[in-house]
Amino acid sequence: MKATWIQEACQEPVPEDFHGGVKWQSPSNIAIVKYWGKKGRQLPQNPSVSLTLTACRTETSVFYEKSDRFGLRFSFEGKENGEFQTKIRDFLMEQIDYLPFVKQLDLHIKSRNTFPHSSGIASSASSMSALVMCLLDIERHLKGTPGIDLRKASFLSRLASGSACRSLFPVAALWGATDSMEGSSDEYAIPLETQIAPVFKSYRDSILIVSDAKKEVSSRAGHALMEHHPYATTRYATANNNVAGLLQVLKSGDLERFILITESEALQLHALMMCSEPSFILMKPNTLRIINAIREFRRETDIPVCFTLDAGPNVHVLYPDADAELVERFIMDELEPYCSHNQWIADRVGTGPANY
Image 1 (cartoon, rainbow, N blue to C red):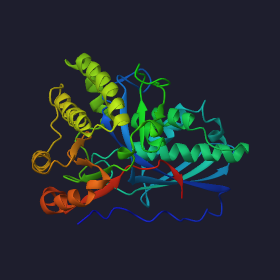
Image 2 (spheres, one colour; image 1 turned 90 degrees about the vertical axis):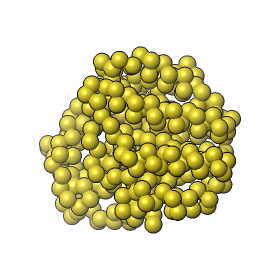
Image 3 (cartoon, rainbow, N blue to C red; image 1 turned 45 degrees about the horizontal axis):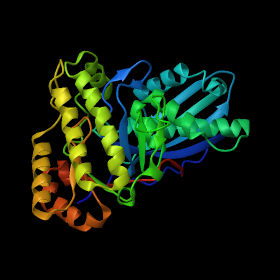
């Protein structure tokens, strides 16, 4: 059966001792061309392209009260979380030049995911982009200005967690400077919604939870291993070529080439981890069983279904909406037994952050 992590949106009233509150939800995203390796101040060594999701999201409420000094409380899924609170405090203090108004606010942040945290789905992407949208919404209320600048939101989200900058845009996003796209930047992501074929705007992503345990190595540690990686230079060149190719594919709707780039990128990511020092093997036996089953199903049916992976064991099964019935039947009949407690999430390309 499908996973049941999708939760009702928070409906907490504004606490009596707080001036007001804002609520935003922001989705995770799945990179097709992977970002792996940093430079400078949270800048990517290579550009990346992602699809924005729908069901896998973070819902964040920020209650605020004007104060003569900064205050912060944080709870995750109903429980106070000191580790996350420290990370958020550090982020806010590091970016105080961009968010000076928080110095005079007492903040109470409540957050929850609709998917399991730290299990290979990009929870930092959804959580930090949701938080940034809340903060910029508070700034908007305090200043009395209309709207939120999504470029600023993407810029700040990047500083919080690199991949978070891509979650600010519907359908698909590009992050990283590349000659293949005018206006691209290492500082923020840009939307691709108007530059892709209709087939990708309704694409499905079924996320098979091979393991819901915490990741064995953090993304931060994984990126750091690229600093002295023997294949770093080759990897960055390959990623740049794949971005150029994928941008053409997304525009043309060439599903065969989409599959080639997508699966190659997924396997390269894990190959880089397997030959780093120290090395990590994050795929599990059932990850490989699922990959082999997907490829066999594709050969037998000619359905353009493929897989990708994040930095973990879980498998994202990507396919056109037109093939959803047959692919989901295949997942239920053949792939569910490889999932932890038969759990998987039926997701699809989404529309980006929203109030709730």
